[in-house]
Length: 262
Image: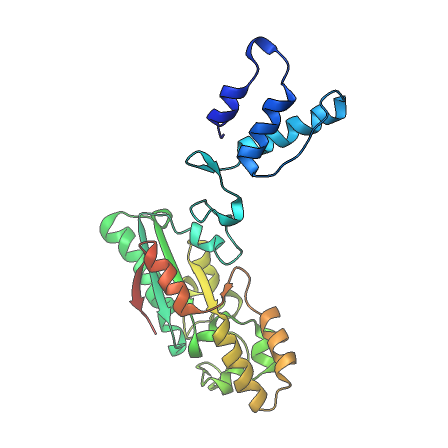
């Protein structure tokens, strides 16, 4: 909690005495630069003044002068929706896997092996690890639901073959409900299994736009229709970031390592 500025402490009435209008006006002018007059003979005016005074006391000060929140570049800003996920990257071991290509789910297997390796070789559990799967490029089918796979023929469009059916995939082959023996990934490497172990999945909005262009050219609808469908069909728990290259920069600034897993 902010302490009352020295200016207000020094100007406060001694022994519970009344504030003098001249003193109060001088304080407000020095703090805010605004000239005003207050009739403290009225109870409502006194209450209003005290409320404004408390609000002023709570504001950040630089030196002995008042600085408004808009102009104080040093103050801590509330996190924007795009920054909230960054605040979760606070564990001892932090790394981001760059998943540029789907490679039949190869990066998902790598993520499982990464977590298993820490536990088996070093006794480090996933609650001490931040692992981010940064999905972009042709990796986007990994984080899209079955309805989109069916609607946009994603197996055909992105060259993902169902090894059991021996034909282009018509459902997301990387999520728990669709894992089968002989499939592209095992149950422990599914998106949901990794999420349960604390893995964070990101997808790049620029990649979404790339998919919109690709699928609209293939005749699956207008860009507006396809964009709305994709944004509405991203798997639960997957966060969309404006640009992955910026997300990598933000993560690096917070000490998150980088591994290319494309």
